[in-house]
Image (cartoon, rainbow, N blue to C red; front, side):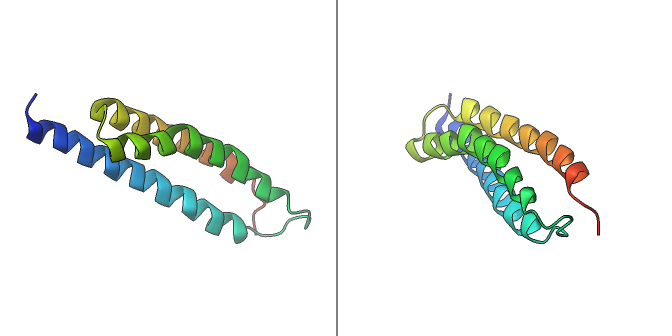
Length: 99
C-alpha cells in the first residue's frame, strides 16, 4: 500500500467524520426549533439516540483519524454512522409535532 492511498482514505475518513459531527450539531438546532406541541419538552429526548450514534461511530472515527490507524475501517465506521443517523433522523422527523 502506498502512502498516497493511505492518505486518501485518511482524508476521506476525516471528511465523513466531519459530516457526521456537523449533522449531529445541526440536530440540536433543529430540535430547538421544533414547534412546542404539548409544551412538555419531550422533543429533547431525541438527543439521546443521536448522541449514542455520535459516541459509538464518530468519536472512535475521530480518534482513529487522529492517530492515523485503520483508515479503511475508519471510513467504513463513519459511513455506518451516517446510515444510522439517516435511519434515526427519518424516524424522529415523523415523531416531531408539525407546525
